[in-house]
Length: 122
Image 1 (spheres, rainbow, N blue to C red):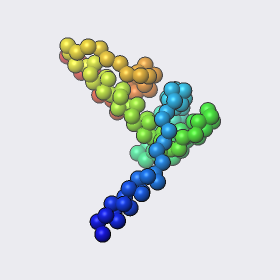
Image 2: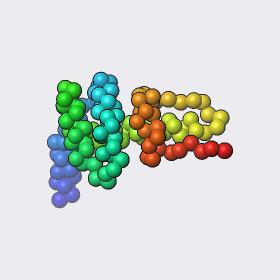
Image 3: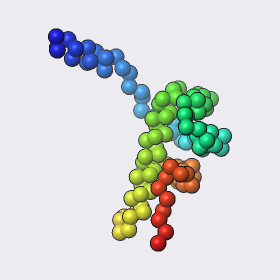
């Protein structure tokens, strides 16, 4: 009986399709859509962002990319985490300056955001 349930789990994971990797141009376009003032203001003022990610996904389609709202949400989360990790590493004294891909563009969007760790003033 256990073997059949394990086989069922394997079948489920094989049936799930993995999203294709993001091309650099797709990420640039995602950042451009994310950085639009209307999108940023909606993200700031809403706790439930599902509708906003539909809008972001539509913006990606307008630019010729086929990404669903979930894929956009996951990628934005990855970008935000990479930015925050880099920013925190640069805030430590004595460490080598670090950067991440798209750092300047992400800083323009997230630099003043409440979701980032503010620099401590001594």
